[in-house]
Length: 217
Image 1: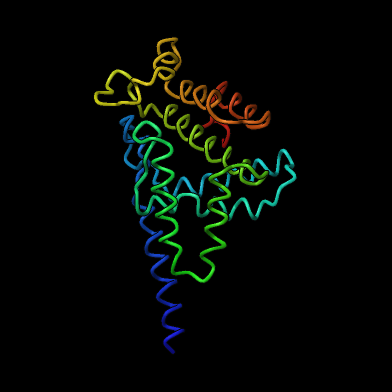
Image 2: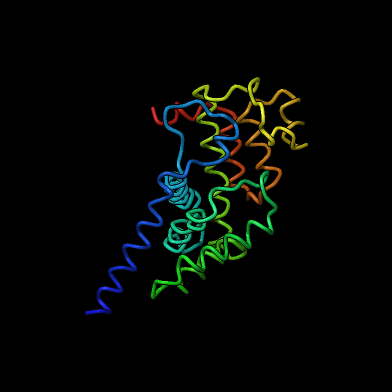
């Protein structure tokens, strides 16, 4: 009986912890003062990036284990239940990685499959295997596309960005000074900083050239 209760407790503890991500608003949108009744949560980002992964696999026929990718993406943000959603402009990459890895190890410690799930999380974080690199590109591109959608809705005013430290980044400043819109800047920034292959670059370019909101009409 005690073993059964322990397993039930583990299930509920893990579920309740991950449920927090429904309430964690993506920090980047707060930094840019996105004006909208509802702003994307981390949990919604997780859903979005999984759907993007399915579409990219479908249309470009990557030779990867898509179920492994979906599993990786399901857990790739669980560390944020503890450390919050920290951007590259708020904390050093090495420091964030250390904090996140410690958090994930603690979160998964109560699950029997914890070590296997943690191994998938660490594989994603290294983005070296075909599945992890594919998942990593999906993660970055999904953020770019959400930015484009918010921009099309007119949710960001670049003239009212008081206290936004991201505006001080040299590349961000250069792109905006060149006349790029908010989402054009975001898409170009990602193209210059993340390892997009030709297919991801093509989708990024296509998003930059037209309106995403018309794609579903």
